[in-house]
Length: 387
Image 1 (cartoon, one colour):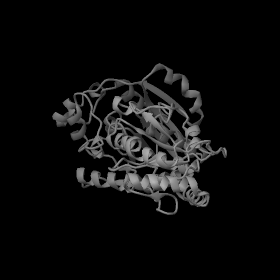
Image 2: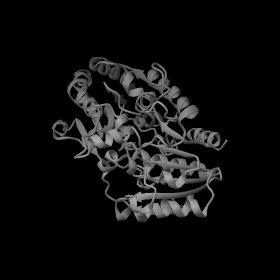
Image 3: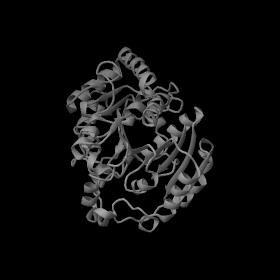
Image 4: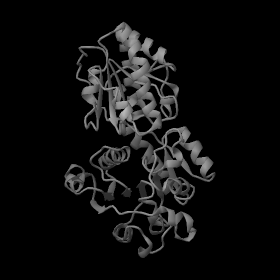
């Protein structure tokens, strides 16, 4: 197949879910001899220098400088929502790039990744099968109020726009049933398909290092309320209970956007590491990975990474949205802080239980969450659309 990829972010660096998805999907599709062209926005000049890292996956790559957007105007003016000519587009350069691709090449499928950045080129690809993956950054309607980011200025237009932004596309991809339910609530006719994310088990591979002292680990984006509440729960309620039995225990919090009232907990025993490029050393230092979300927190790629690193996982039900994972097999499911603490102590002391969880976790990844398996689902989707 010939596939045109239009993305809100470049493939590298892989700091975001969207960039990581495009990188691994491109790798797998290119290995299967599909022909890929990439059009992507970039935000920083240094991103241009990263092209050699992924250029070989594509027949052509074009990066376009990102532009400011005023979504409120389009939300209020229905006729302006989907531009029909270059002069009405926010990015005329990207309009020209998309037009050049669809005029010069035959594509079987157009795959878009993003929201407000990429949706506006829909008129240029009419007649072609289209698939869009809403951006993790811009698909705010899918984010419950307890988790929502606070955007300056245009928050409400962003939310309201998602009632119409994705409607014309042939398929809208989601990762969890909760997203699907919200999508249906937003647009009853939404043609959605659920496809999970994957994990790179060649990259996330344990070395066999045994932690010197007991360690608890959690990773998240602390601008999201669900992640912040989980981190505070670990600091204030779980860690003290574990330390009552195992005083040397450390808590590692990985992520970004930590607010001051979370940073106040940093100490010799509470390590808050932000904007970490390679989380693998922290997984190796951890005896247990904890994910105690009390509200919906999206598809938790961090849990798959923990399974790949053979770090035993204790999670709440809310943390397992979209994951085909079972309590007592791949992970242990708990709800309250005292249960997380008690189970963490038991896991640290019980080598046989840790071994059993690792075995089930590895089998789960192999059967469902390798990027090869995810690419199979994308291929099936594309073939269904082509007919």
